[in-house]
Amino acid sequence: MLAASAWGVLREAVRPVSWRRTVRHEFTRALRDVTRGGLATTIVTAALAGVAVVYEALYWLGVAGEAELTGSILVTVLVRELTPLLVGLILLGLSGMLTVTELGRLQTGGQVRALQAQGLDPFLLLVLPRTLAFALGSFTLGVIFAVTALVFGFIVSGAIGTVQTSLWTFLERIASAMSARDYVAAPLKLLVIGFLVGLSSCLTGLGATEDDTLSSLMPRGFIHGILAVMIPSILLTLAV
Image (cartoon, rainbow, N blue to C red; front, side, top):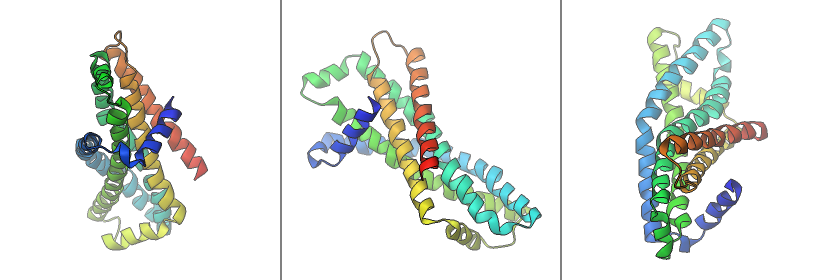
């Protein structure tokens, strides 16, 4: 069902007729909620990751006399692997669970059937804009996460005296260590993970029955969301 729904979202996304005013409004609202809702958590988590990853890498590679490996290691560990994974978990924990709850209440409360009775397609109105908003929001938060982690980690390292270069030189070293494959892999992971987290959250919410409560619906949504984060992350790491 997830694969069929994903294909449906991609197919409808390129059809101009699908983007009516109500759908555009829902997409804008969902994108605003995803980015604003996850911004503070993303920055705080990125700052902690900057200390845990960037500072430690700069310090220990400097001690080992392998400072020239800093760029390639940070690109592989932080940019390609850690950023998509943590951003996906942030999206799931904040916006994903909120979407499961919101759509679950609409489904059990009969509002979804009311939309269908009015001739409105719940898939176009509820699933399409939210799924695409999650994908774009994931990419946006991922860029913020990576930049914040690198900058904050460098600032901490500079304050302690681990590095003697400028921030600009450090960022240039990171950029030069990125290959064309890295420029494809990191954004692709962010988009795919955000897309699947949003889609799985929507489908879990709309799949709620009258017997479901928040205590039964949210764990199911969380498990589906974790799989939506971990499986594409592992597969794309192996494939790209």
